[in-house]
Length: 149
Image 1 (tube, rainbow, N blue to C red):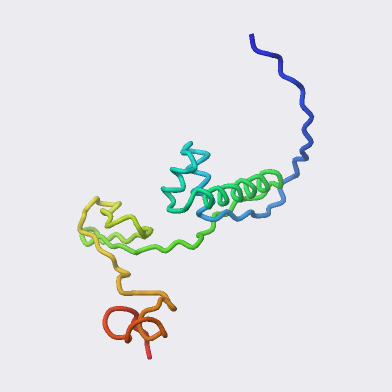
Image 2 (cartoon, rainbow, N blue to C red):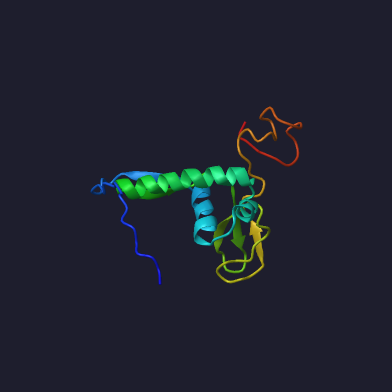
């Protein structure tokens, strides 16, 4: 026979919804999804995200703090993009275009499952990437950034 539940003193003031926003980064959302929703341990979740376990722990702690604030203050949660670098792909069979994160390999088309796909952003680079005539490595000739000069 289970024990009787003990009465506890909880001091929480549920505020009426303010309409504010609490921002959660994509990293924070992914950490919460892997650890809290899917139940993966932190070591394995950190490996999937490509970060160290202590870094994952810091991301997760901050995400949980923000989620708590959103719940207690009645805020909406806004997911922000974070600092992820995406690659743009195109399916040459159906013409579908989509983004994929780095490190996923060459994908098949999510629309028609064709493997006749290719990058359409290849050759583009960010300013200050260390290529071309931006003061970085090399002579500025060959592959790399082409800027209007």
